[in-house]
Amino acid sequence: MLITTYISSAQVMAAPVKPMENCAITVNGRCADLDYRTQDINHYDPTVCGENGDLGGDNRDYEGNIILTQAQLDSIKRNQPFYEKAATTAKIPWEMIAVIHLRETNLSRVNPENGQGLYQDANKVNSEASTLYVSTGSEVNDENFQKQTDWAANFIKGKATKPDLLINGDVDQVKDAFFGYNGRASVYETQAKSLGFASDYEGSPYVMNRADSIRDPNKHATDNSWGQIKTDGGSLIYPANNDYGAYVVYNALKASVGSSSAKCSTISGPLRTKIVKLAEQELTLWESGKMSIGFRADDPTSFSKYTDNIAADWCAWFASWILKEAGNPVGVPGREWWSYVDDFTEKGPAEKGFVVHPNNGDFAIFNSGSHINIVVGFSDDGRIITIGGNQGAGENGNYLSSKVNRNIGYGEEATDFVSVD
Image (cartoon, rainbow, N blue to C red; front, side, top):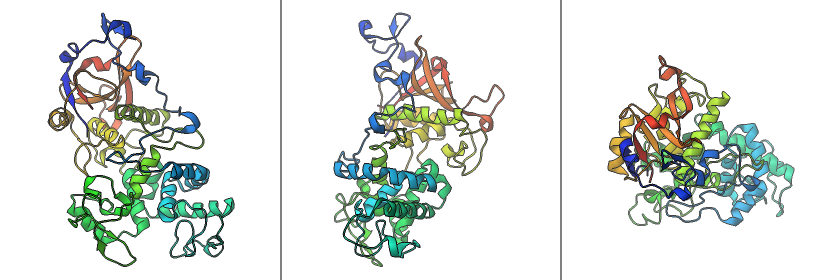
């Protein structure tokens, strides 16, 4: 989870000092770089990827086990241009198609004998099913594979409750679409509620199996708390199968494989790096005009994206959203946010822990709890660089006219810092 430290600005001055001979930036005789330069945070460019677009990433489950094998990743990379072409037209994340392909036919390009095709179109919804799904025992050609993939992309999109939100990778809608693809069995809604989740898809092993310890069949072999329908028309059988849920695989895939066109499409790396990259990513969206001021419910280009459709001051919501997207949510399942800045200083220390000085990915608290920013680096003269939401509206502005922006030097006015480790 999140917070391990919170300190006042007075304590920052008493923090251990790095040896001056190893210090890239000094201010008033003190080392001020706090490891930012050594981690290249000062020079982060959200448009630059690693070699071949591969961002590396965290292809492991909550216990540290590998989720996707190298053979699976190699197969996905081979098929990725087909997934991406279909996803671009359908306006969904391409990784969703890859996950369904994996779940349904283990990434095979040989039509199975059941006549349902590579994405298991059980009801033959695809108008070209009779020709595309013919089983020959050999791999389908590229044209056939693209047509099946195009159909699957649109079919997956149609299973989401709010499909237009998939274009931005809305987490709830990604989960919802996977749940819809699997049939939305009502027993999973009951299972979700019994485990304390508000959303029905959280109770589906097809979607969330092995996401955490309470949904790990290996941890609940005998207590009948995490079951799965294992035959068509059947009832829950305990425990669930051992396969990773579609969303668990999707998350691992996004952290493991970049875009085939070598443009960054995922956020990966250590938690602090993810926080900084995500903040920079959102700033880029605002600066490019893809996000705009004003409240519009269910609109991914409005700040409602961060606030669960609540119109209110949203600096703490923005910070919470960043943490959730970084895979380190606060709050409770279904309510993964702290809507007040005070929550970061009051709940943070009690629930998380402490360190001795602010670092990249930490949170700067202003006016003893009235505003919050994310620390993303230092300027050449040692001033703290921050990114925050619900700001930039001018002296007389309010949350309806505010946005995400960057400040250089504002961090010096912070009264507290909350750290993530």
